[in-house]
Length: 67
Image (cartoon, rainbow, N blue to C red; front, top):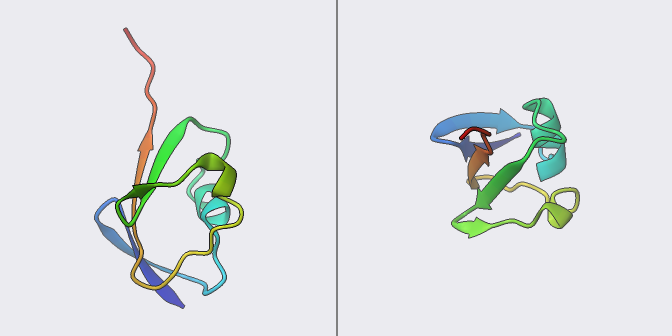
């Protein structure tokens, strides 16, 4: 198990969790989001290939429509 910080909250996840799997678990698949991993924006094209590591800090922001 690894521990990651997501939007200020600590979460325990299986060792082999990739960013795409985490977003699916969070119900964010297909949503318009921006994801920052350890202070750097992670392109959507890398979500499936990026394995999370113990101690990672993630900020996930969802786009909200309005006007």
